[in-house]
Image 1 (cartoon, rainbow, N blue to C red):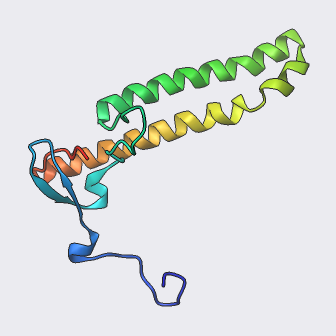
Image 2: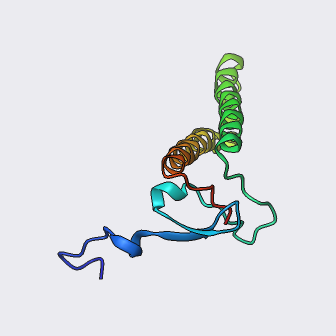
Length: 126
């Protein structure tokens, strides 16, 4: 059990590998660092973006969104309409959290892509 003293979460050998289908159709073994962000769709309506370029685009878009969120409280302070802040307070944590997650996902996938290219592995698709 992970709660017991002396238990280590470090996986070595075959236990630490993730076996997934790659772009070329073969099943390859990836470490968690080489796999990157989640590639499967999770059975949702929208297929997730998992390429480094797509995640970069989303991170830039989220940063623009955060700029708009930052503009709101400034505009409220300038106009003196403080009663609006009670209605839109939740946008401030969201405006901070969304770009942070987007840039973290981009950095994780970018690092994974560099590690895969160092081992000459194709990109996993599932």
